[in-house]
Length: 159
Ligand code: C5P
Ligand code: MG
Image (tube, rainbow, N blue to C red; front, top):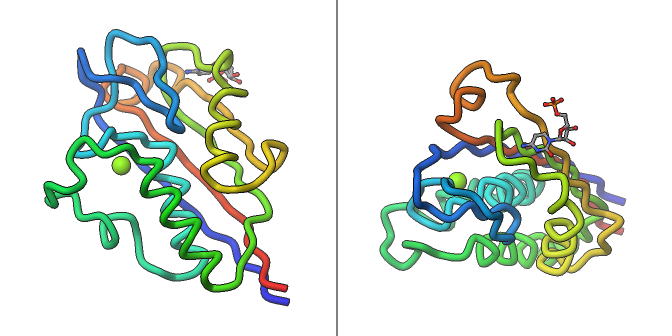
């Protein structure tokens, strides 16, 4: 039996007028995350955690951010690709735990929607996907509203 864990982190600037997409869910907000793709920090962090668990590099290696193919891309594409890569290596995804650090807006009412969307993309039960939220207590770049961060950890099992 082969057990693996993987860690992911992402950070994007906030920008007025950009859509705020977290775990593939569009959150009502006057600002959103800026980036080459849809800048979904949560999906990016989970993608890196999955790739990390099987030592297959990182998201930028598979989806370069200077490649026009990925401009404005739905980050669920990256997430589904990483899940497929780990399954191709014979692993099943046991669980995913995440934290989004964003000063505002309040996200807790979107928790179930985000978990459901991620669970479908990952091909696992919603009870195996955890999404937590934190402010940065108004301190640092996240706290003053310049950026948002996400962290993810995954557990994989190869019977
Ligand atoms: O950062 P803090 O500990 O003050 O967050 C308290 C709670 O507020 C969190 O546990 C989370 O449920 C919620 N929260 C949220 N949206 C955020 C930040 C925090 O719903 N952007
Ligand atoms: Mg990113």
